[in-house]
Length: 217
Image (cartoon, rainbow, N blue to C red; front, side):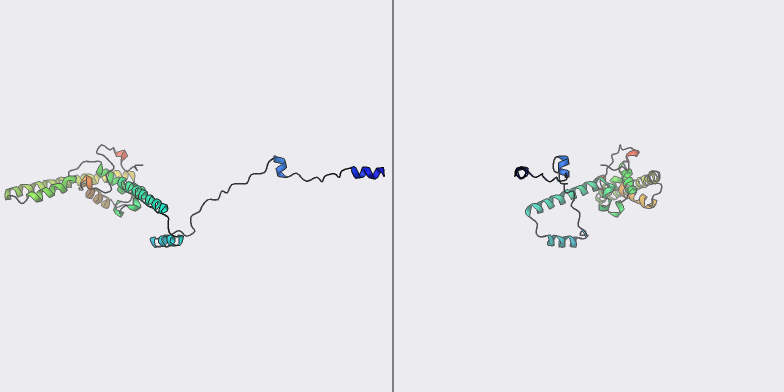
């Protein structure tokens, strides 16, 4: 009877369990944060029509979303306008085909960095047209003045073409642009008033040759 009572009072040993990762560290393993990022749609809209259809499927926009979209569009347009104004090659896709390319940028800077009589040709021709209604003697003087101005512009154009050829071949020896087209592009810009040139002039009359053709950030 004594042996049975001793066996009954002895507690049963606890079952041993294998140590888990939590027991080794002393704390629970933290969960990994969700690192997945939003991806663009598989088939983004390529045209304005597709974009409108996608907006219709997405549902109407709220007032805040419409205001934000307008602000984003206004900021993008101002950024593009600033790039066009600077003649930045990064915005070539928004320029006219005649103004695209590093060579055209360089030619524009060459023209804008020098003073010329040709940039006043339009004002001179307009003044001569108005004053030509006077006497015959005055008309003869104005005709001579127009011939002299034209001769000066032709002389300046020859010098400008030589300078364009020298600088462009130095900077872009393997250019695919035709030199004749670059000459005509430079001459057309040189006889345009400085305030009416587009893209806007980036260079002053004191600009150095090393500054021509550089992108203004």
